[in-house]
Image (cartoon, rainbow, N blue to C red):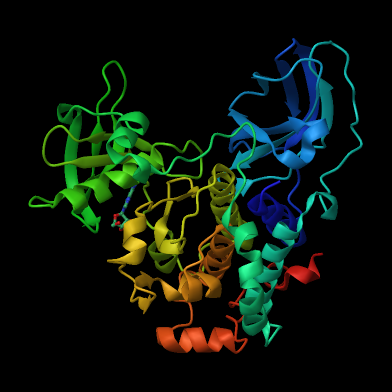
Length: 445
Ligand code: ACK
């Protein structure tokens, strides 16, 4: 189980339940058939369910290897065939629905075996995942988050600095989950990475309609992408402005070679790139509601807590996936999350050079780099030690941004004051209207 999965399971799921007691919208899950490598499942709809289910997520793992990770798949139907399984192996499955407000609770866990048609049912198990699967790595992350949110430990930063060296190796290397492919750093061979992970689009297929914003190296436009025999799809197009240096072109396309490796409903999808003509472009799915921070600021007070938690759930799912892939984002914030028309939140902005150079957020220069201080974990600010654990810290700040409808973290405090205050134990206070269950993790545990 990754730290994100653990974090999510322990924190958001329980918070959601505390806040909303959201029911599972999935009825009885059955095994229809199994072969050596596949299992077919189907389930029923529960009565009186809202008709806004977008799709279902099926999560599964080999029972014997519970601690080494899980895989998941999605379907819009009430059934699925899960393939690529090992013969004569018991797998644990559970299913949940996704609505516009986010995921609902999981169904009960069920054990089904490949290679025979019998059902090894253990239908009494419920979703209670506690300490057994948790290594010291996850525990430290939870503690980090605990201190971030509660601000209970005045000496936390000092004590943490002392232990940082010891922890460094454990935090830095995120072990990828078996069954999920691992992120490949495009820096190893940038040209090859663009070829390998992106699709070249003929520019005649792109229709640019209007400018919607400014990127670091050019404009961001909205438009349409035509695919022969299919309907045009709305897209956002990032362009690289003329007169660029080769290094800027490489940095620009680097983001595409990172995005092109991801395939998750909460990560903004890359459609392709234009590299063989000018302007050089990156084409991604269009997110109707734009950045999460400005979206929330424009809709102050418009959402229920369940809807806000649904948005956070999406971000957590995307971050779980990135962490499982071994990718550290380093710049997670509400401005780098995009929102679609169904309120689904997707993590975006994979331009790591910006974290260190031209970040739009006033940045603090430490050890030769620039860092978005308000969102960055103390060990990353002090030692440039970025990891999935420091991404969890940033996620805590995103939680605060979401629950306060896009308020600026630490308001008008200077970056230097933020650093000093955090060192002294100050933490962001509970946002107005935020349930205590969400703010204080311990109240749910
Ligand atoms: O808040 P916004 O409207 O959402 O303004 C910024 C702007 O471009 C500069 O980044 C918008 N933007 C970026 N990517 C996308 C996208 N994939 N879909 C829709 N809007 C986007 C962002």
